Image 1 (spheres, helix red, strand yellow):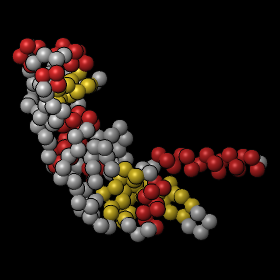
Image 2: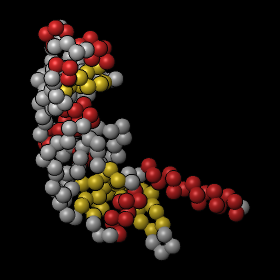
Image 3: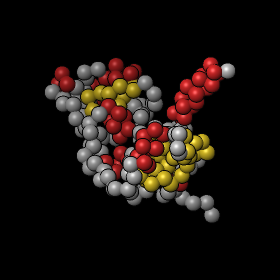
Length: 194
């Protein structure tokens, strides 16, 4: 019996790792949409005890210490407003998000790489204005040729995105799992049913 208790005691907390908390800024907007601002339940509970956040919604499940039992937070809001960054980092992920995870030559999704519109071999630089998401077949077809010589054309000209533009694009790509307690905070500007 002692072995059963120990096994159950050790396994129970691992089930709780599937209870992330949606983190909202003090204005009740998520800190980020893509990736969605989520904290592990342990960090959410710690922030509650440090009085850095308020709990807005909770899961049915609880966590216990020898003296306390609390329900696991599912939505928390920061007490202090965190100013969003205005500058967008030039990363592969942000580039794919700007291009909506589509090849900018043929529009296909999946297996993306990035391509220099003006090839580096011809003096092209790695920048927002010269790099686009491209599928492998289009990237191979273009190679180090110019757009005109390759016969390809861009769906839209590449530009540096504003931070707000990327946040709005991120809302089009929700994660695989959305807890029902999060919905009101993610899509507050969606059209309401009459």
